[in-house]
Image 1 (cartoon, one colour):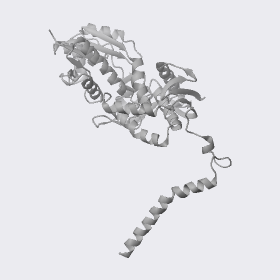
Image 2 (tube, helix red, strand yellow):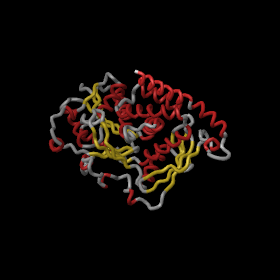
Image 3 (cartoon, rainbow, N blue to C red):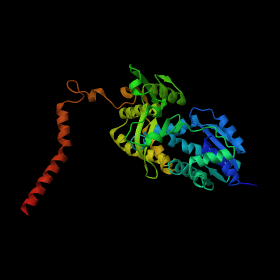
Image 4 (cartoon, rainbow, N blue to C red):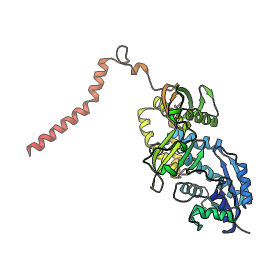
Length: 406
């Protein structure tokens, strides 16, 4: 009997060809998995199309809640931002999809897992690193790097010859990747970094020029670093993200345009829309500034960068990421409170902060009459603080005299 393979299936042209190619060119029995990660499409037809093309089983899973609870919120608590602004939307989906692929493969006794990555981007690293960590005995297949097609036209010709009808046909010039945490847009005119992204590249966000003329304020409530409320009302995780995507997007907030270093070292111009992620990260950092010590904030910076790089590089299932999560679970113990933001014409500004664990003391911070400690105490403190500065100055003077005597 033929061996089995589980394919990550999107319903698009290339993964649709993968079903046929794996079955008839590799002589494998094919099962597919398609994940609902908040991309805004009904996936049952995707499974039906996989069966029509030749899969013997088609699995569809709603992973939205797990995605937010087990992947997005840990990244928020870690303050994980890759390089100059990528909020890791699609990078966070890959280990979750890989988890489901492995689960199905183990349940069905499949010897292979396959994906539709080209190898030039980041996804192959992420999928294969995750699968290798979870089930090192399962072999990974990358059909797009094995088959002989040299162009999109050859792929279309193969699909037409074998009556393969992909459910999703790419429209326009852009390559788009969507989940509820963000929308990534690439290719077409965006490959030229000397021009501004055309307005037709955006779907979630209004142009700041066309955003409402009146500002909008919104309050995000956190419990130990996790968003739990909007405008004072307890709100489910997915609803928080959906609402902030709508509100932020309507005010033009969440457009990100950056040069990004891919895993292989290739620089790429990447454009993202992430209204909810932008607002949540901004509010979370403001609450950390209110509730964390100077030393904790300083250490957190390096840990956050390390966490972001692990996620970006596909190393979610690593001992280091587990260890960093342990650190952040402790560091977030007091990151509880409310942050109010004002949205206006593409910008979001922190306008109010509140926490029962605030380290801010108005009596200590205030200047002038009524301050917490007087001039005598301050003078004594600075005399002690500056002892080392005076000693260093004397050291420099002695060194100069020594050189002059030579």
